[in-house]
Length: 286
Image 1 (cartoon, rainbow, N blue to C red):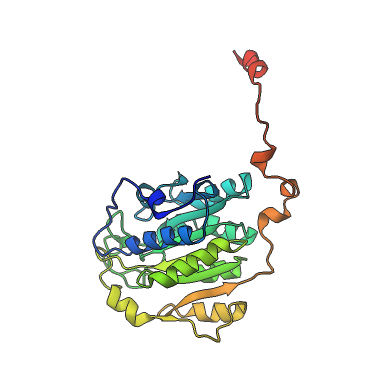
Image 2 (cartoon, rainbow, N blue to C red):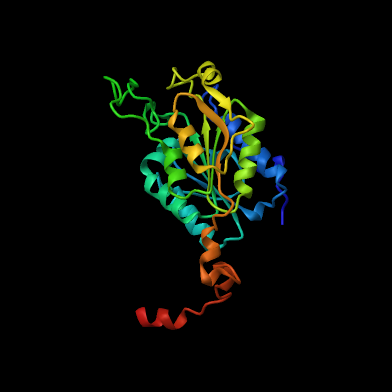
């Protein structure tokens, strides 16, 4: 097996994100987390959605799968069930996971599937040049809402906590070390981990720039009890001041694959025949 190093993760394709985009630091944090965990290249599968975050597929080397818009988590669940020994990380945006893929997010939470969803949350559909996303603030003026957004932003992390996710955290692209630590904790957690990364989009979200985040994010206090589900939900009701850290963690919640009888002794891929003779079947249909 090949050890994960920064050199091994280096893609020949240079990132094409806009200057100042938070995606650069998220990619750096993901790489650093994988290196610090001491994992092997063959032990990790990266699943990518669509959008600016999905373009990460071009900028990192590894074993992975580029899914359809909103379907990344469904593919990640399938990969995990096929070989539950893998560390599966799904990389998507707020539109990808909280919009088109919201039903799959709820399914991943309910089952507590042992994978990590890393959400690049810039409150916009930025690859299509700045339409509002499910996390955009009410009143946001954009190409899709020239008179202002009517809906309230979705409480995606509250949905995750309410529906069985075992690990829910919020990070900020401007705090690299904290982001690395949260990604590592999410990957190591045995169950479904959702890490929402707040990030500026300098091209299409001028309101929530780095100065805005500096004024509106805060580290959860030392006495914050991440095992208290009620406290997590109360904290998440405030969508103006954004608490950073592990918002909720349930170490008593059993991961999905551990309750599937046929996976108790071996993974599905290990149970699959090494060689399958299809000649008889092919003769019947020729």
